[in-house]
Image (tube, rainbow, N blue to C red):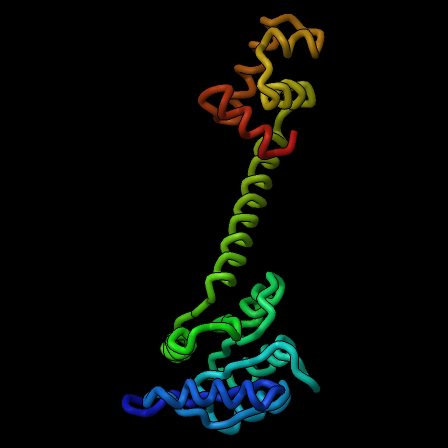
Length: 219
């Protein structure tokens, strides 16, 4: 398709918004707005009928809102790349866009050059997120990593005995062997034996690693 323009469908229920987006995109000779849609249902039909390369999709529209239309778009026009262009940059909107196969997420206050760049990136098969959307994704990934680490830690401590878990929990609080012994009514030597056993079972090099593991596991 070398030399052919990027075919774009604009879906927004506000005519003035569509006109403004069309004007911006038409300023680029490599982009052609082939259709407009005033609701999500029309967007699906337009993308399929015009073999759109990119669909710019608003969220709040009548008949079928953008986030509901997105999975239908992916089924009806699988070659079309969808960019959500909205006023509402809430975390849930960003994550649902990506979960449903969206290729980008932009806010309507995006600079014209950034909008054009996003359309070009989507047409080339890349994803494009506004800075605010990127922050939401990073936060989600970070939360996912925290969840994975906690699950791993819980799995590692599952093989400990109840008393070993009690000792490990006190290590997580930063208690010394003597303090842990007083808390558990054990001698310091007995606690030391438990600590050695715990380190071996958890494959930890020292009590600091064990303490961090205890905290990750929620002990």
